[in-house]
Image (cartoon, rainbow, N blue to C red; front, side, top):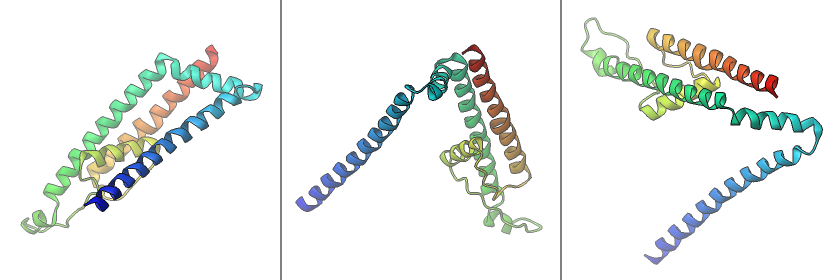
Length: 163
């Protein structure tokens, strides 16, 4: 029993070490941005990014983006539940006429949230869509990628003009 407890303690210590190392690495690289402010060619860019993140428009943008990601995650999750219940192999066997079974990779809300977040970043997984799925995908890409990216660019432009 002591060997298992010792292994568990060592495992927890290693995981704490890696967590602390990750945080320290992030802090070190952030500090590098601070040192870049000493040079005139970097100073205005870093100050503009800091000013943008401090502005109220940026926080409104983040709030809207989070709501849109949640909205499309809910829609993708509901659609995948429909596909799993109505187009599974068991459901297609009892239909008259028989149908071809469809599969979806989204099996939980967490995966739907991940899928919606990746669509907002421009990472597209095009497998497993039917007609309604494609409609959701097109709406998500237009709203989350194109419109929200243009809104982000306009926020940076406004801050640059005011800067």
